[in-house]
Image (cartoon, rainbow, N blue to C red; front, side, top):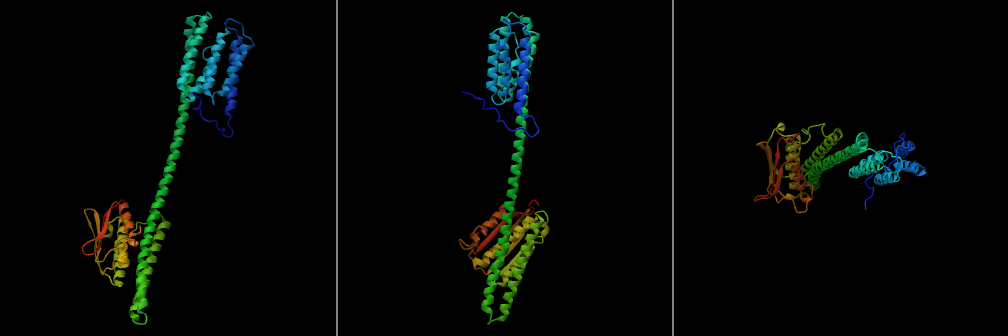
Length: 396
């Protein structure tokens, strides 16, 4: 069993606009008055108009109140009412006049097939009744027929086009909503990615500094009272490491405040700063040898920063876990790619240690993957090696 479920639910009109029910009441009044006027003219018919004939006119007008909520019901009742009126032999009221509003409402509700079928049925049956009443076929199929067909067609076409405009407007509104929602999700994703990047940077900076400071503090504690010169040197290294760490953190904070496009990243964290990292590692007894064959202008800022962080994290793992005495750092640009190697003679990160906690080796891999590069890390015959390959001129 079908219903009028295709009709859109009624909503309150914007302030200052005429309520739809009032417009329908006015339309119903006009329809009822027009049909009553035609009935009163007594043009043809087998019997003169009476109260029932005018009741039909009022009923056709009242059905206009259903055209928005129940268009199919309204159209069916109008068509059947038209047939009943002509069957009773009252003066003809025209083929299309009673059903024009119903045809429009049904097409507007997306029931175009119903509208076309009802229009054809009304035209055919009404014409048959009028022929039975003695009206001339030439008159009914000529001027009268053309005008009625035009009214029926126009009503259906207007309903169809009105629905089309409404559907397009709804689709455009939906597209705008989805576009805004997608833009919000993209912005949220960018914020999340930036937070992850800052988290990795803070982990790398503070983790490296804390590792060095912890070792130097142990050296100072053991040397106090036995070797004051070594204790002072350890404290000096703690001071230098903490100052450099604070400087790096402040640089990141300045970049965050200024926005992602306010600085290019060079001069804040760069392969040019690897020498300081190497000096810090040497200060705690690790023999670090550097072979950096890269000019700052050869690398995109993001790649330069990532390379620095890889070296920093690798040295942090050496200090914390590897038990290495020698580290070799090599970097160079070949065929448009930065090749970076950090190799030591130790045992590598301990399972479950900082190198495996999602912020060490995993963090390095994620950083390299984001830039379109690759990273491998593992033990070899002489120790533990980290190798990274990144596009040198990653899009800025």
